Length: 102
Image (tube, rainbow, N blue to C red; front, side):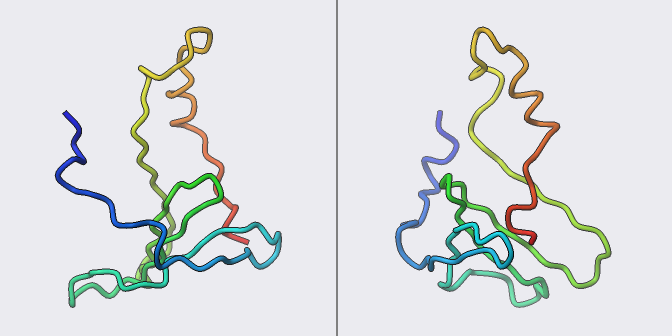
């Protein structure tokens, strides 16, 4: 059963503007359309599509001193190549973050 069948994704072709990171000039796209948030939510949000088509939600909470990131992909250990068992677990522990932090 596909958990996402009852929650169709929006049309990701609309509402994105092409951008470049400020220092390294890496291309990405940022969603400029409206995001639905509760009125009581004081955080700021950015929705970004990376060059590999992953869509990332960046959340800024001005009341915190730490940062965190999370990514959910519909892939797991059942997708490991036969000759690289454990690859999904390894990738769980490493990350390439910083592409948009410059």
